[in-house]
Length: 87
Image (tube, rainbow, N blue to C red):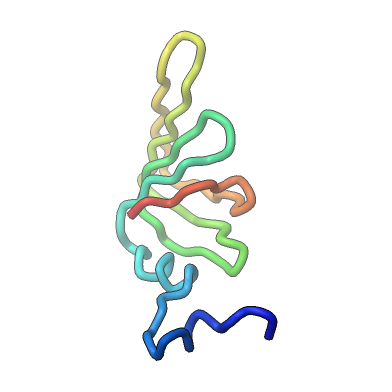
């Protein structure tokens, strides 16, 4: 391998990104999307592309007239548009 495996580095266990996301299932997360959108909701599931299913959501958009918050019962987010996920 051209790069050392993170799991084997210095004999320490390293949490992989998908393992960290998996620990967030069932808890409230704050997700920043590309553009001017943020989503806050309960993470119900995800796949290997980090496409996420959220329930009990609020979609927050910055508009020229101010912030707009739109409640949503559920959302499916495309993982390629997610920039940050905060538990």
